[in-house]
Length: 370
Image (cartoon, rainbow, N blue to C red; front, side, top):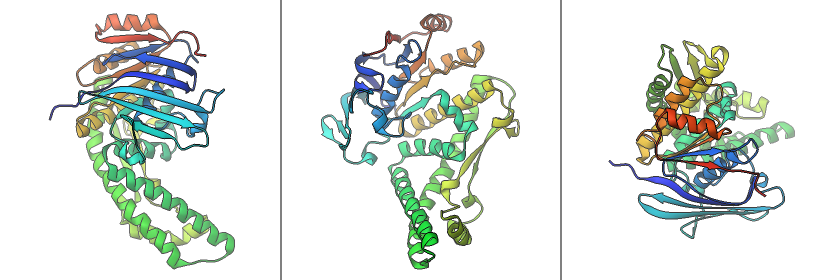
């Protein structure tokens, strides 16, 4: 099946983070975003990400997105998908419901939108995928599967909502020194229904994902390092009903649901040891890049649409050979539209010459937008 072309032709930002107003046209292929730190390079990538997900990758609340002088922002993007021109407009006004419009038609449910415009982003703080807690790694899995499956996304939203309600109920039981097993069982059953679906998706996803990841890592590193990813879940050892039943008393004491798919994790190893403990900064960054590029490959394979690839300051702490390997990799037909930020335009121009890159655009953001 041939791939569906997908790229952003133009974006206009109003009161979005650093920007008062800016309008930019992009190359269909490689886009290098240059400028000093604090100029808005990362904010521009976040605006592209926002276009694809209707939320920021960097900020948990929309309250923190508008330019500090204002209480609203707007993103207007013109894209090409399947050779058709489309417009995406996202409008936010404080204390009002956010509006998302595709070709002037309002989208009311996020599930109708997520996955339609696939995107993968890599930022320096993503090193928490390796160094941080399990929640970060679950979000990595969820980000991919939510773009691949509306069923997964819907069940994940429901699971998280029911989990919060069950935890609130457990806390209420503890504070009021009461207990209603029948009521607790209602929430437990709802968790079971959604959790089993989520677990099965995750298990199947990792079976496809790991071989792709290992191949990409070797393409970048070209060494003899052994790397592995192991999926950790209680549901690999026993059924979900047993997990919930055996932990009921512990849940009551802890006032929260102590086990379930919300405690799943991924174990990353280098030469049979945790990479977070033995990996150098360069090895950890190569591992991280490989994770994200494998995410890209799997999305592309499953959706037959090449995702947008957003790379923020990825060359830091990498040697020249690995930088060249990455540039050669993304400057192939495997990748479609790519955005790369860097502070030094001259260094980018040198890399372009050395790696014989064509079909690119350099966008220098210049002075801070007012």
